[in-house]
Length: 345
Ligand code: SF4
Image 1 (cartoon, rainbow, N blue to C red):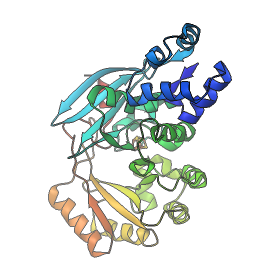
Image 2 (image 1 turned 135 degrees about the vertical axis):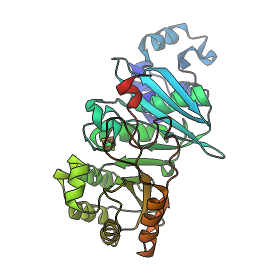
Image 3 (image 1 turned 90 degrees about the vertical axis):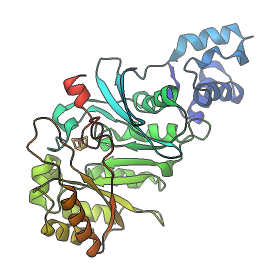
């Protein structure tokens, strides 16, 4: 089978040589038609209209199965779309418009096995990991449906990307192929709940331009264990040690995500502990006000509490970014993907 959503240009070149004894001309034509012109049935290209035998073979081998976009919800330019995969599982993706371009937030798994207590996806449990085609397909279909200028891709949708690392890395290679979608690796972010083995594997892959976000959410082991059951696999000290060894390119910072939950992790003492933990790291904290999810006893923090926590961190010398919680009403903000899958709509 030829699944172009799983292939870099070099992979395709090798495949057409092996299968059809053809060279760069065919690979270039197919890749350009598929990725630059966004034609999923690129085998129909006029460029090979005189070679009926080759077209027949291509048609037989061709595969395009990223799933079908079932639903889309629009609000103030932000779009959440739900893709139904071939086996009926559904995943959610979000397109966030910025002034000059768009960012797309994609899923790496249907559901998630990490079980973070504050997260809608965590309540679904893990159905399965996505194939490369299903991961790249979210960006491809976003471009087809909502326009081309997607510049940033963040793996912050459903799932723990490091639980599906092999497919996620091949997806990154396909997304960043300059002959195809051409999304630079420096504009792609992998986000993990802190899988230490995954961080080590990523470090060994030597992809220095990729961005890494680590979801920390608690400044001590006891609280983190309560919020993130995965924490049992490694302490904050071990996570810190792993991140200290992570090969950060000059000028880059680690992104540390901290979901701020009212009366849970938003006290002065928590800010102090977090600042202490961050000291040996070149990191920037993204403060994300907790977003309400159904049947949860956690509460979002008030704006005053967010400001106080942020101010405290700044006083303690922490580099802080305050994320504007767009998409809250759409149930498309951080930690909320999965609502549409869980409750329908
Ligand atoms: S926060 Fe991320 S890792 Fe945790 S359950 Fe949700 S999707 Fe999974």
